[in-house]
Length: 376
Ligand SMILES: *Cc1c(COP(=O)(O)O)cnc(C)c1O
Image 1 (cartoon, protein in one colour):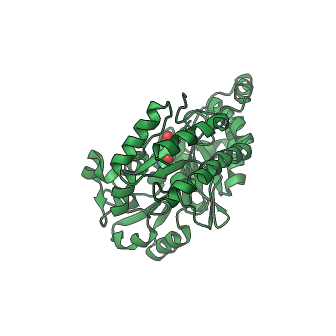
Image 2 (cartoon, protein in one colour; image 1 turned 45 degrees about the horizontal axis):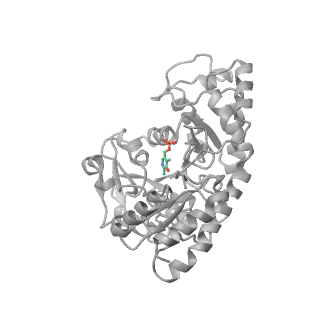
Image 3 (cartoon, protein in one colour; image 1 turned 90 degrees about the horizontal axis):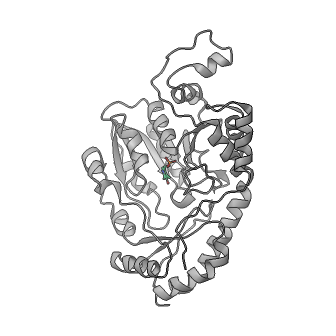
């Protein structure tokens, strides 16, 4: 077999829309396709404002500027996440404070957040791992009580919900990724979701090099000038044209991914019953988008042997995050709250299986090899 871990899915209309953008003669950001994508996101997620960015990393950086952080301010987040979650805030001089994850969802443990709060805490970043929602009601309540911002790093969760509310629409701000490893893609790409209207205008300015260009074009101001700190965070309209083809098929893409996810889940119920492996847990209040299928092996050694066995069969199964608190920069710039027991334990046991559109034809072979590698 030769089954890669990921294979980007193309709908077939990407080049057609790119050729339209080409014919429009508008290649820079905020052209026709960017506007279409922004409007689609506002409708689909239900955010007050959605702004395409060139990556989720860029969108996180905008949230960090919007948060008006001062050096030494603290931002609470899981250690079990992608580097961009922390980098965005460290770039502003803030200190990431790492909190442990829940054993079931691998999301930040909401019950450990309050003990991590100090007078320097300014924000909580909720990362929806594998597109499965964090316990948002509790997180929002804690944030309101302590006057903190909530930022949802929803890089993986487009199309998922928590208590019927789309992920990314619940916190003050949210971010999305359209990196080619995500469900809906444009190679590199992302979006900022603005849920608290008070951030809308500043978000536009920060994304446009700190200028009031958008307001100028809307005729709201008569000068186009430097009004904020910012950077160039918007994608070319060519990238948005590609993304538009994907958005048109978003529901089909999610449905097909869910079918693959559910097939894995049914087959691995038996080895789970025998204690050989643990499957993902989806809380009843969460609907997910099948971003990822992972298994938890009994320990690090068995996990690594398992990956090796699948590799020998030509199947790309991979581990995931090396916890940030353990990384060189995390140790230098961050702070740990509590013991991070689950973070340390689960990160070494997790393995992700191939999940991409087109895998359907070969999935039975993957399942067979997984069961064999588990000795089931
Ligand atoms: C993919 C990912 C990012 C980064 O997304 P880019 O679009 O590549 O910048 C950030 N956070 C999480 C949780 C991710 O999974």
